[in-house]
Image (cartoon, one colour):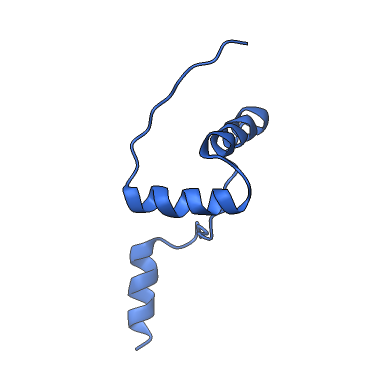
Length: 71
């Protein structure tokens, strides 16, 4: 299998924090990125967890308006 190079630009603080975490897991940045991309390719989804939940019944404006009407 042939390989390719891919360059990214990162904020220095983000790089330092993330690479430190990866080092704690015994991973190089290259290994971590390869793991991430393998998961994306295998599952056809982004393997991340978000704590944001969408409530389709309420728009943000409606929710804010309702919260102020209870005052």
